[in-house]
Length: 607
Image (cartoon, rainbow, N blue to C red):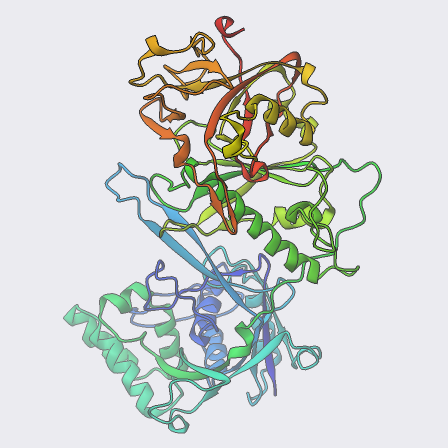
């Protein structure tokens, strides 16, 4: 008569470790060994159903008042070991969590891995005995009681619901959610066959069969592990009169640590059974993104998505340097476009074009204007490394583009650095972002500004150059920062005097200290924009509390097929009227973080 036991994992996780493996080895006992099911039933019986004895007791006798007597439990377990069961595995993946020991308490801070199998909460694990002799009504009732109290299977985190059935569920052969794992005889396996194209062979612990040789082996091993000579002789006389069910129960009552301490290859009363496991059960298709409901008119328009950067290293994170702003912004954009391509393939409507992310129309032409996405990597703790990325689109992102940005979780770095962990920290309208709500008149360069045109008129110009101030005003007008030049009160360039002889400075240079709040330009001066610097003056910024100096020309100026020519400048822009503190960028490669201006509260001397 068939006997079927289904175990459904309520949390979707199965924490199961091999008998001989360390819990931090990252190895999962999947499919679970039949011996594990037997030990779980014995453990459940000890919860006010059966009075369990010690495996070294002289006699295993029944206690009055037990709902399931010890002898009935032993006979039931022996019935389940007459043949190894088939197992039906649900489609499975694997995962793990890392737990770090605290440093400073005698530990090294190393990680402990807790590996587990991930299964669907509605896809149970199935044990099936097809040729088992029929269980009596009492045995069926005892088994039902045991399974009803089985609250977890394996580790205590593996919450479960176990049920007995008389036949295989009807849905088992109608769907592709389960694969059959069946025991194979060792004689049928070639000596050199470790795996097959469609199957893997794995060793699992199962109870030994009821044969004279195995019974004698159990008696001999149970006697040998008893150290006390007097107890050994008494136990040897008792075991000689016990049958297989009682001997098997003694083996199941032993703790796993006892078998390991005694140096046994496997627990007493077990054998290795080879199971053929289909490989297809672990080949999960990538989950298709769920189609999002159409946005209503009341939904807030998304114009800003901000990310925080970190790495998975235990100690100091290895973030990209601020000089790689152009490279990192381009890599970030490429990752967003890759996710958009994946999401668009599973969109039920026509495949949308990533206009705002790529900066081009559907026909491949450039967008006329600057109403597409700006990628602004920033160093907000002034240590010289990029720690945040703001993706700003004045016209608003499409829903598919927002979905692609939300899926950004990890970005590879160059130079052997560890992968970056990308965490969204804000998603919504830029008007709702609190740090950009205040008003200010002064903005300062976070990255150098590169003029998009050459300032010289050629060899026949007589040395006359274009006005950098006029070109900057034109850039600010094109990006929509200003509507007319009257909105600007003053534009100055930040330079560090260095070893320059300031006595030779022309009158129109008019150097003055740049006492701006913040350590990036400590000791710098402000000069007129269209006046050349003196020999020895430096353009750049200081990071890490003024310890390191990064020249403007140290910033990367090459991206794919684009190369920036010209001089990078750090500027201070003062507006005639207060405006929102929202950053803006201008100049060459302004959509990739260069020419970025952020708000700053100036000191009274700079007004």
